[in-house]
Image (cartoon, rainbow, N blue to C red; front, side, top):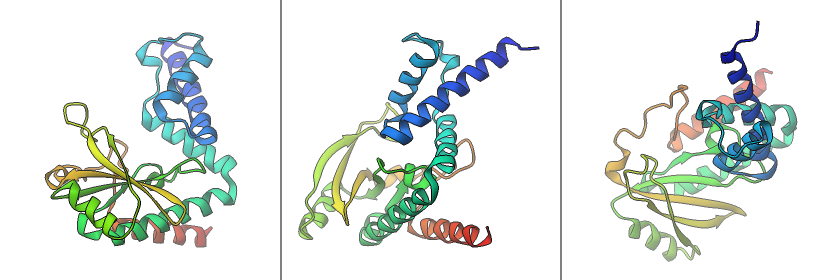
Amino acid sequence: MPTQNNDVLQLRAEIAAGAARMVAQDGADYDTARRKAARQVLGVDRPAPNLMPDNLQIEDEVRKYQSLFGGPGHALRLNAMRETALQVMDQLADFRPYLTGAVLNGTAGEHDEIHLQLFADSAKEVEIYLLNRNVNIEISETPHFKGGRHDPVETVSFMWHKETIHAELYDFHDLRGALKPRGDGRLQRVDAAGLRALMANDETLEQDE
């Protein structure tokens, strides 16, 4: 027999699937996609909070969508972005770079860009380093990964081999506690060694298939 709880779970799953399509097809951010999908499924602008899927559920749906519809092109695109990320991380090794976002979790598609987090003594060090190497940078702000209680962090964006890189500039002490796994056990960020291990593991899995 259907129950109210099952109905909630089903609606939440429908919203997550709809949001995932928008993320994969249009490059929508998770919050925008979640709101639009909820409006499509429920027909209201302010649904009950318990009907809204969290980011982890949407991410899982994006991963399913890419596996169904991405084809070989998705795997090639993801690997190319990880290779580029690794090149940049090696260049910025003095600033303790970590990869995060869709390129790390494997859901990156044609609309995604590479997101790094650097942990340096000062943001100016990173900016000067890039400018001295004739890298054109744009400066913006990004919400702190630890939440709204912390000030936004300066972010430098630049092109590297036709890929857009966004490097968030954190203080070194922000790294403390930042390496804990997410609630689902997946890593939130990896350094260059971790990225190499991830790519080697994916290559091994492909060879075994």
